[in-house]
Length: 77
Image (cartoon, rainbow, N blue to C red; front, side):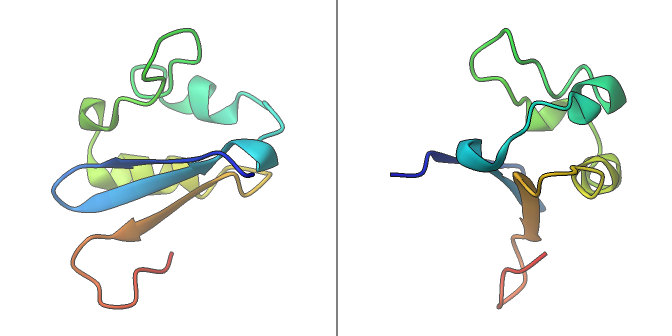
């Protein structure tokens, strides 16, 4: 069973699929105040702007991190 977690702010939701994660650390290096692998919950979405979060999620090489905008009907990233 795949482990999936969702983290939301007012504008967006980040989806993390643990089974896809290759632990490249790109997310941590890009936004260390948001992505904190040694703390639970490890993702603190309120620590960065939505634009910064989107830009960082798009850099995930494995596709483990995706997002969707909360106000969109189709909820795709």
